[in-house]
Each structure stands twice: as structure tokens, then as C-alpha cells.
Length: 305
Ligand code: GLY
Image (cartoon, rainbow, N blue to C red; front, side, top):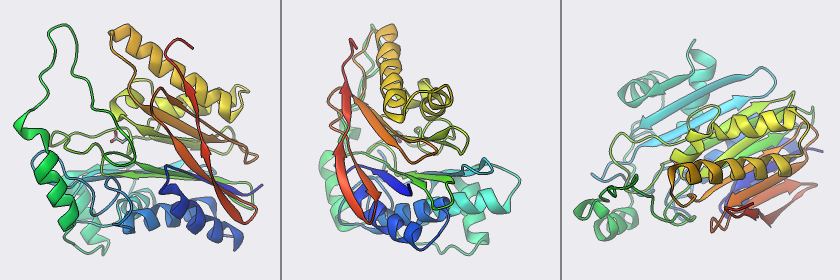
């Protein structure tokens, strides 16, 4: 059944926008991109996707995004993109107009300008006020002697990504992942979101998966590709997402740290969906199908599971 799923409460806007596109016969990737772009454009409801998001530690807003078409395995990505409003649309142009998959920083901006995207000012008064008050630059995390620095808790207010996965009327899959990354990140830091196989992976022959949460942990296990490969091996989307969370937990245990807040969501080639999160991620996602959108709470996978 044609279906679209999207991360976090702001995923409702993405699912509503994308579902209307699927209903009129658009391709999965077009629907997912329209949904993701609606969230990029909405500066009122979140601080971690698109313009109006919380900047990095030195006050610069840089955006990361990727797209993938499950029919052809075509994909494109940008990271560290400044002053361009729609990073997911730029990622799609990388996919369609270049022989490459991934452009970063000044090169990504130069490419966007060549493609006709306007340069814009990305900062809102609200985001800059919050950055002034909460930016931890005056108290940077000091790595503990016996282990790596830990990330702060995340939720939809200080972090995170909109990942949109769609299954269209022809049965094809498409996905988009777009974010400003971790609030107050170190300049130059890139998380999982623009990395094909980490923040997103889509293959019509196996399924689509996306991630949200602390990107370092998702990259460490190759999260979204892992979920898709589990579905290829016969797991349901729900089982595959839970296995990915177990792997995040196990990776944390090997490093002697508490598992970070991470969530995965997935769609199989028939439009069945599932999602899971590590402890305290409090992850909800929007599911659009049959003309309506509902919010679903993901199953939590505790560290011992
Ligand atoms: N999941 C988004 C990031 O870590 O940047």
C-alpha cells in the first residue's frame, strides 16, 4: 500500500505533504523530497532542520542532506552547506547532474549557486537568542581520562533530523534525510544524515531505512544499510530496526559508555513499516497512508535486550 513515514512530531508535516503527492501519482522520491522540504521551510516547529536551526559552536549554520532512489540506487548528498535553504534539493541535483554522490562545504555551495539556488540568510532571532544562552563554547566537554566524551541528551527540541521514506503507487521506494546536525557541534562536524548507508539507505529489492539521533553512533554501525540488509535477509521492518538498536547498544558496551539516543525507521517493499529506538530516545514518527497521517511511538530497546 502507498505509504510515507517521517521522523519526530514535525514528521507529520512531511507525511501530510508527501502523502498528497503520492495520492496524485508522484514518484516516491518526489513525495519524500516534497515532505522533507516542507519541514526545511518551516522555521516555527523545530530547531534542527533547515533555516532557523541552532548553529554550531561558533555560530555558523551548516546543513547536511542526502536522497536515494530505490529503483536505480541513484543517490546524492551534501554536507556543511551554508546559506542555501534547501539542502535536500541540492543533494538531488548532485544525484541528477553530476557523476558524483557527495559534495561538501564550499564546493557544495558553489554547485548550488551554479544550479540557481539563491544565497540566503539562515538565522532567525529565536535561534540566535537560544545560541547566545545555551552555546556550550564557554564550557566545552572535556574528554574523560577513561573514555571518550559523551553527547548531551537529544530530543526533537535540540536535535534532530527529518528522515522521510516513501512507497509510491508503482511500488517504488524513495528516501530523503535532512538536518542541521547536532546543535552547537564543533565546526566541521558531520553526522550520519548525509552519509548514504548511515542516515539513509533505499533499495526497492530489500527496503528503505533511515535514522535519527546521535549521528556518531549511527555511523559506527553503518545503521541504515544494516537495517536494509536485515530486511533483505527476511526480517520485518520492526525486527530490523530493533536489531540495529541492539547493535548500537552493543557498540556502546564495547566502548564502556552508555548507549546514545538513536532511532531507526524502515519500510519494506510492500509498504510495511517499523521503528525502534535506544533507551530514552522517546522517538515518535508519522505514518501516512489511506489518506490520513497518524503518529506512532517507536519501541524502545534497552541496553540488555
Ligand atoms: N542525526 C543527525 C546528526 O547526528 O547530525
